[in-house]
Amino acid sequence: MEQFFKKFQPHSGKILASIVIVFFSFLAYNLYQAPVDGFENRFVYLLKEYGYIILFAWGMLEGEAGLIMAGLLAHTGDMNLYIAIFVAGLGGFAGDQVYFYIGRFNKSYVHSKFKGQRRKFALAHLLLQKYGWPIIFAQRYMYGMRTIIPISIGLTRYDAKTFAFINLISAWCWAAITIVPVWYFGEEILKILHWAKEHWYLALPIALGFGGSIIYYFNKASQKAEKKNSKKVEEKNEN
Image 1 (cartoon, rainbow, N blue to C red):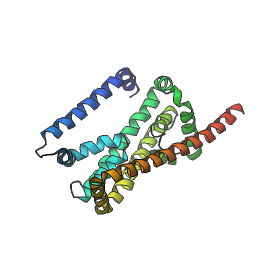
Image 2: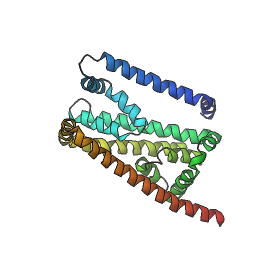
Image 3: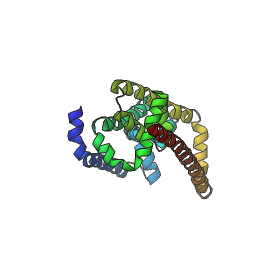
């Protein structure tokens, strides 16, 4: 495994870029070839036809928007609820495993590419020491730390099998916590989306304000926690 990652690392950027280009080319081609009229109908057709593939890729990026999509498709009967949770969880698991092994087998690469993230890595290390394995669950909801924490854990001597097991369970929990409520309240959400479509001039500023407020809150909370824990790290180093 270590030899594989060392050989993969110098070409990782090109390989990942090629995969992304092929994936989006595949989606664009099928969107164009969809046997329905109108962009919206074509997009819905694409989600129904290739929903699980899209969901897995979205899960690797840990995007909640993909989970919301899956919950709505499960509500309308175009996706199986349990398969959607399973696939989304596998995607989230795969993404974090990649980050973990980047840290485990490419330490010099991480140190050179993430120079500006040293405080976040110190915070992630401190959180792992303080809270242990539950931080693997919590990191999925820690905006700004989702990539840093699995890489940081990979940099330590944390057992890879233990991480993989906890990561898999936490990924399925993450998927279920988002998909199930959307599936259950699907009718109400669809009504809101229909209203937003009809009154986009009102919905757009509301959505931007609401989303911006959430991002601002999490950024402030993360910065506050980072400063607090960075201070602890500095005090610990001085002692």
